[in-house]
Length: 205
Image 1 (spheres, rainbow, N blue to C red):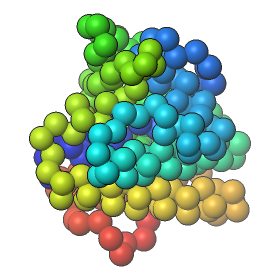
Image 2 (image 1 turned 90 degrees about the vertical axis):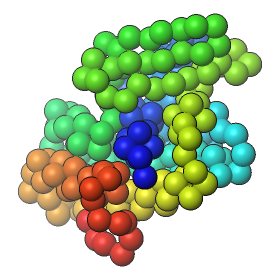
Image 3 (image 1 turned 90 degrees about the horizontal axis):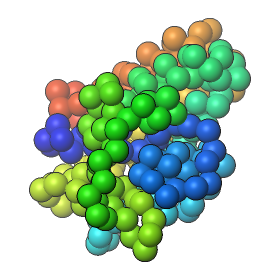
């Protein structure tokens, strides 16, 4: 799978920020999307993705579930180890936080937009649909084959399951430090989303 494809998930979703209801700019849409994830509402989170066809719909659903799972882990780490380590965990997952989003540059051309982050993470491509900005899965996937989209969907699902397990461990005080959570998330991310990592499946976190 091309690096462009496997890096897409971690940069286009799971942005972490304070709840903002307005979404009349690409950045505000990303912040509002996080508010939906923080509330645990998968369906509301799903509304911020534009998908075409059955395979992209399944991918979007997997992403939305991942958004909610990672938001729960962030909250658990923040309560147990503090907000700085919660942010470190989010960054270990390859995602952006509110400060990253607010510092990002948005380039808008008619109904197309790109949000570019200062840390040079993969830009988020967005489209305006019925007046609402949404993440465009078609633009992010590029020329990905159906098999590649299926594999990405599986990897995201595996990621979500393992993040849920980590959240339970944090809630039950099984980690001595937030750094330990951060390292486990980084290991999980590398295993599932880096091209030089072994195939996903059947491995614990």
